Image (tube, rainbow, N blue to C red; front, side):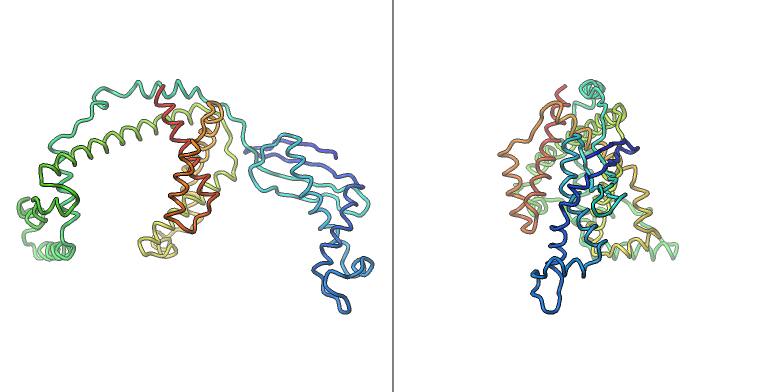
Length: 363
């Protein structure tokens, strides 16, 4: 086989070559049999039509196309293994030469894993972590934080009908130039919320009284603030690694990320009981408009996935088998229709990424 591999932009390659005439011709009988198996002819049982009759009944071009498909599906994996090509998309195949007792000429285009010039990720992580101030590290929960959160909880538990009436009444007052909500005293507004007492907090969960609730709420707010700082730091580390690494993202990976973003969006809108088409009409946009809008986000996500994968390879970071099994079992228990293989890939990905971030944070 003569093979020439050419690099294209956007991390794609083109493989041009020929399969020798003898090898290509060897697929003739197999291709004829496959096409004959599906042919119905009067006087013959299906799959039992003699070869000479098949040759007269099936157009030669159909046989040649079947031969080409068989030859390439067998030889393409051998080509990419031999040339050490990391193909990541379905091959786009063009046939250049197709004739009996002749070499099969073809051209194949496919996306490959890009060459990555990875940033000094340890140094990048060290720099970001060193910039966290003592004030940011010493997380405290003020009385104001506590009171604001309690107020939010009370507002979320306010009777919905009452709230609707209040908004309507407020609108009416505003229309007639009467006292509006903005001129009411805050005490009057508070009176419309459920009273904050022992019974109220006991209805929220396993809390003894207000004092017990406040202790646990304070711990919870502190934990939330710590998580916020962790997420903010991780985001800065990611941004720095992306900024200082060099790679070309294959188009196919950007498209996959775009599909995921739109799928999540559709799911969220469906959960609200809305139709995605109506939502698009309301925005006065098409799916294509959204794909253009989210393109940068998708590219960033694809870049990040490639860089994290490269760091995991370099540092030999892998997921713990017992943890993977436990998480997969939990997913399959809650989502009976989930595909076990996809669930496993998802869990491995999440656990490896968490390990990578812990590794970076420990620098």
